[in-house]
Length: 355
Image (cartoon, rainbow, N blue to C red; front, side, top):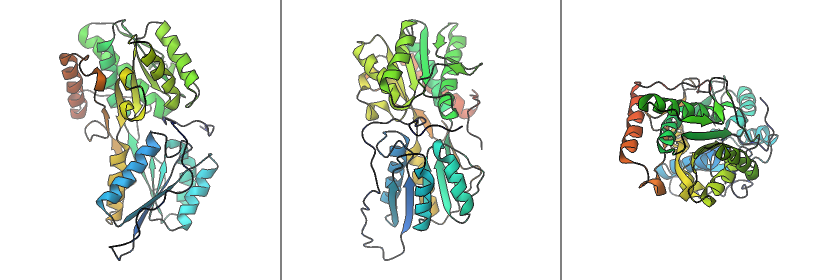
């Protein structure tokens, strides 16, 4: 599915995107050997998206900290047309490891990887047929299941909501897990908490059709709140900030569950955030780069799939809600994590990563 360049799947756009390459902060001193170059191409969200581009860059920075023989740099894409150009530029610069960030870059990465079969590529949030592209994917449905259970347990109205940016797999996987977590709560407690904004069976629901316009996010969540939802999970990038700011202004009428990066670190609305469904992109990227720099061949199959068992996904701390979440509910949410990791609870979604 082609997506207009303004759309950043799952990406949160905050502040201006950086342009050009980051200055290299290593002057080749002290090693004497050939540097291992890890080069990253952002999608249109840019390096300052406070989401998966920022997270992937953090992973490269952490790899460099651990192995100072690694040189890192990035280039920010302004439009989809830049993807192939930027990837090719790094091939021509003879980068050892080229990282593409986000599923939106899948087509371009596959094309350039196919044309350069001896070049090591990696991609976040996609799996491609080319064997020289190492995939890093995240089964966020598992952590979203925990979040759905939590939301149901915290709801006073018996109604919780969710909405997305676009009906695409990196978005609907969160919504599927969330709905199933609510259903699991209902079964365990004999309750009937409703999910507004998403029907897992029909794969139909509420969408902003945009990942940046905060007024669109607010409009969709206002409708859910009007129907009675008192916990809402936006999966709409920066558009979701319309929901978090409105929740903050509501004086506790409703709360929000954020996605991708802990919202208390990436948004100004921590006081309205119950928790966040987190993708641990930094660790996945760091591990891949360190392995490759150490001479290990990265296997495209199975690649990396982050889940609760390997800490690839998680729910963030409760932060300002810590004293408001009952101890027994906290314990139940933790037990769900253990049960999913052990395979006692199986979480399914049509959008789950393929291995």
